[in-house]
Amino acid sequence: MKPYVVIITGMSGSGKTTYLKALEDAGFYAMDNMPIEMIPRIISHISRNNPEIRRFALVVDVREEGFQKKFSWLLDKLSSSSRLHVVFLDCRDEELTRRFKIMRRKHPLEDGKDLEGALREERALLEEVRERAETVINTTGISPGMLRKMAVEVHLKGRGKRIILMSFGFSSGIPQEADFVFDLRALPNPYWDERLRPLTGTDSEVKDFLISQKEVNTYLSSLKTFLSTTVPIMFEDGRFHLVIALGCTGGRHRSVFFVEELYNWFVNHWRDYEVEKKHREIEGK
Image (cartoon, rainbow, N blue to C red):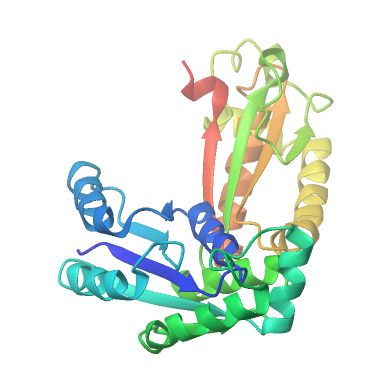
């Protein structure tokens, strides 16, 4: 299958970097302000040597001299080898002026003219580019979080929200990448049963032991209630992945069991999310 390439362009200050970062967080290989002549070769090289990378997002704009002509050349060059989607981000001049003042940045075309003149010149340069876009988004009044969500909706049809469930042992340290950490050490421990000690939370004997414990069922039920409310809120502001870490003493019994239970629950009831599971202490050996 041909690689999917999203070309992001538009007015300076309209949110192109935010849009690019949203796609990068969603798994796209991202490039910002790369010399246009190099882009087809880079995509070809990466696709050939890293076949698992099939989605690219790149920003090109008036920062590059001769942009109009080079942009047309880029589309012609990539159209036969890629599935292209051109996104043009626009914004009202008053809003762009306000953003430049807040960011204290200089417009790339501002040399020898004021900001108002630079914006006029940029609009004229981008008129034909805008007409070639499949998607045009006016970002006036749109928050960065909303723009990130729009990027996912346009290119991933609402997918891209990823939940990672991780079991770990407190004896080896708390995972630094965790957004939530739940402590299971107060729950009944299969380790003290010599029959169960060499097993893990994926074994039926350990599962049967834990599911028979009232405290375990209460904890699991409360945890599902908490996550049902909290997880959607965490993704509201354009977040693309959430790491939920569950720890017990050694990371082999209770935490593994909980991750397995939650994984099945998410997969069966949360169809809008991509769910992964990791068992740090087991898989690390």
